[in-house]
Image (cartoon, rainbow, N blue to C red):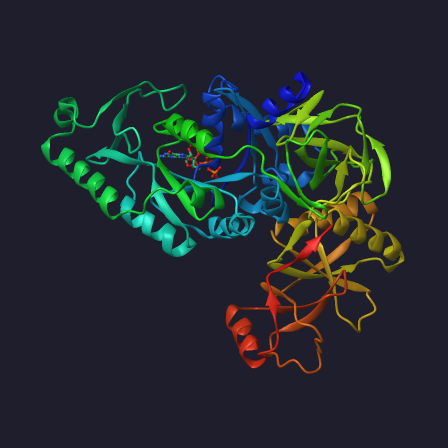
Length: 535
Ligand code: G4P
């Protein structure tokens, strides 16, 4: 192996690319900020939020962003820590939860799941967890807000196991006294780490690490609390599952860490252990077999497309996950789906919201490509001959449906074009009724904000105003069985048959009861909640 190949491999091996999944308010922004703080990427905590605020001032491309005070699109943050090069993929939550949130998970090699220790496993966490589970990537759990009153850690572990169906293994255990969170017991090192420092987590907190048997802890905690802690630790050792790294790597067991992102207690321990256990870039499935990240040729795929800042131009940014080899600015690659060679001239990387031009990047990294409208979600770019295609990105189940009408039928051509392009970009999913001559159409979205984006963009980019009529459907199932006959299927009254844009039949339901009833009435019917893969 030459020196250059050695350097490329070294760069790839030190990469860790992960997404943080959580329900809104569990502490994703705060933990991200603290990871950046420990990585030295920001000096004072608070910067991620203030960066967010700054961005609203400069990006007036989408009024919705300003009106709502939220970010519509997710970003990527890269920083260094302890020799690792870390890429955090931000998964939009709150009202800007959308299909992009799921697609982002397709680009990650592992996930960090944050759980609020007072609230336990919440709705959005369940949905995101399901996608990570489908991919079989490792999932690490950070139980947050230990500085506040919350639920019993044993109870939370049980909830994770029963609700999510994953085994759990606490890597550490919280040390608390009368409601205050003092530190953690590290089960592997068998030592206690107690934190001090009260500047609200604005800087790295000092800590003291000593054996749990050290009399200092008995004095500090008092006899009763100390004995309870030892009892808990013994119970975990005796009754808990055994740690199994293989299961962790397959996403069948989640290592659990306790802490407080706000006060920084437990954050560094989490970061260090997570980096040791999580994987470097994983191989990716392609039509010619698995592509090893350490291959000497460059390859990557597009997982997300973001509309541009400038409404007068339709260009966009396509986010590419590099899957193998090294990327250099200006390189020529095959755009496999388009059957063309293209030069990648204006690649961008993101730290929080600051963009910079990247000169080079490696497998595991995410870069933004200038897109004059040539990319689609799932496209493969590669240097290799023969060319290959990576496995595409699944189409996720919309949860909101609406009928959209054009206000002025003279604008029909622009309307159709706009809908087609936005659907190609992955901003909406389009459905139709077999017998309707599409004066109107039905769109499906994962997050309700996508409908507002649709309305805004059709008006601003295509000069078409629309009316939106919300439909009561909440669930979709694609029909996977052959020989589906819409006349013969026995539905409930509130269920409807539609066709997606690839002409696959789907059923839309208003409640879970209807799904079960339809399945019971039609034993031969096979329904799936993620459509086959697009490419
Ligand atoms: P999100 O991105 O997951 O939506 O959550 P975010 O980090 O914005 O945190 C949501 C709220 O929870 C914030 O409070 C934040 O300060 C608080 N929080 C995060 N981590 C911890 C923690 O470890 N302990 C405690 N006690 N609180 C935590 P907020 O009042 O909504 O905002 P702010 O005014 O504090 O910024």
